[in-house]
Length: 140
Image 1 (cartoon, rainbow, N blue to C red):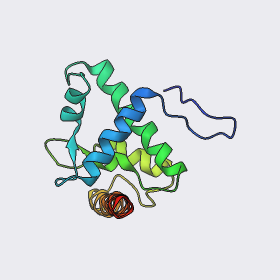
Image 2: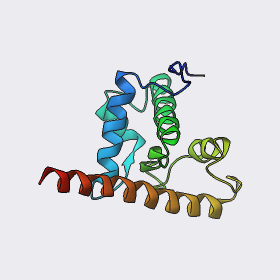
Image 3: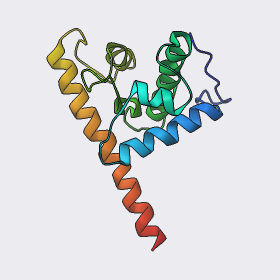
């Protein structure tokens, strides 16, 4: 279990690595593809897929970023991290979403997972694209 730092108010405080992941995932959400593989995210952060210990830690760090997002009223940003073979998040993502109360249906059903993925992915993309448009509008 990861040690998650919290403020006096009980809110998650992201460490420097989690902030870096957050920026990377927001960039992916705003980008043309809207997804990044676990493998590519690992490589971006100097973690090889073969390094199971650090790769599992990466998954936990991604989860902390999603909890942070949820605390701030935003959709699960980790939905943009997908497996190479399925182009969907792994089973752990769906179990995690269910444990947080975001996914209301059972993650054992493949159709439920596909539906949740599609809906949450749209919510994440829409949220961050709107933020980008607001930022551009404010800048001009």
